[in-house]
Length: 459
Image (tube, rainbow, N blue to C red; front, side, top):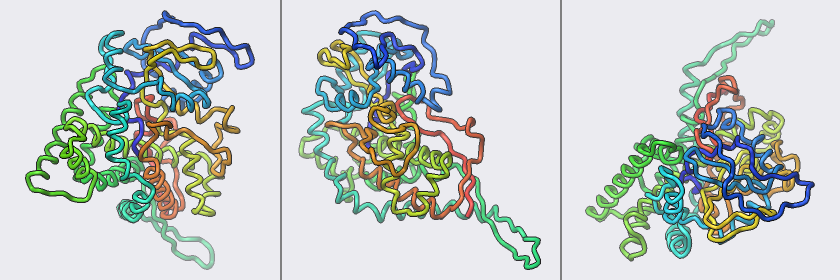
């Protein structure tokens, strides 16, 4: 599921900072103003509670003002837009640019040491005409027809991973005997697994490996690079090393294919053909592979983990889904809305002043669109903080919008539908194998996902 994951946030925005300009929804809209010198507070890291549950803070932001001005740990000013209507409009507004090279130059003129990921060039960090050219090269691979053709492959990988969980259950099989007059022996197979490590991560990464033609045995290496790129903060050494190693790795595979005249039917072959036609540079090939590799698994990993946790928290919704597994496509749409795998879309900047609900964002300012806040907006969704798998008020923004709308949306939904359906069918009972407050979340406000999800599976 290729989404806004390959360009990091400028360090960690302090979402617990009070909005400097706010008004109550029932009060008259404020006059346009330019808070060029907002109040500064001492930078501090996000508290763990904000990572585990950002929604109360996002709700306060959404209720208090159409725009909040916050600061990254590096001191960069960020304007956050939290309301559904405003976020939806901004996603398609050409005045919010995403060219990461221009953005990096702008950041460098403001503060020192902020890294926006300008070392990676791809369509998500580009504006037209570069964006149009880059997206055209790969968009056919994610058409509805091509994605549906991947269904057997996704089903095969899913079942193979579930089969690997079964022997673990067998090793923990226990026998219990009833004490009734007609005593019978019954076997109950249980296993404690980390759903992220053992299922949610390998599934999408193996799919992306087949799609791109990359060696699946290196999947842990891909995960290390991905983590360094999307969660970088402060010291950028790990980020830069990951970018360098990934680039060398991809180009080495490309050179090997050329020497051997090896052209399998995969996306990397398509990218190399585009380079031969003069449509892509080496840096753009590396950037495209990085975007597809990272975006193609990060968001699906997060979605699978948060969806399973949501089902554990809502047994009534789990029962409704188990009663008719064909409801899964509808359920996935609600999982995407309820706990969006991308909480903040990638950083944009204004190319001219933009009015948002009576607040003017000046030119050359950095803007974050909060998809997580928009998808919990009560002005758009009824009872938004409740999981309703048969929700009728659809229209979430989990995949973004406009020209940068998630290219892999169909593939991500297919993977999630197949994975959750098979998981629920294989293991009728799942329970959390730790206290919920002990769960660890990804250390980034861009992504919304669990580091681990220990489960006890019962067959």
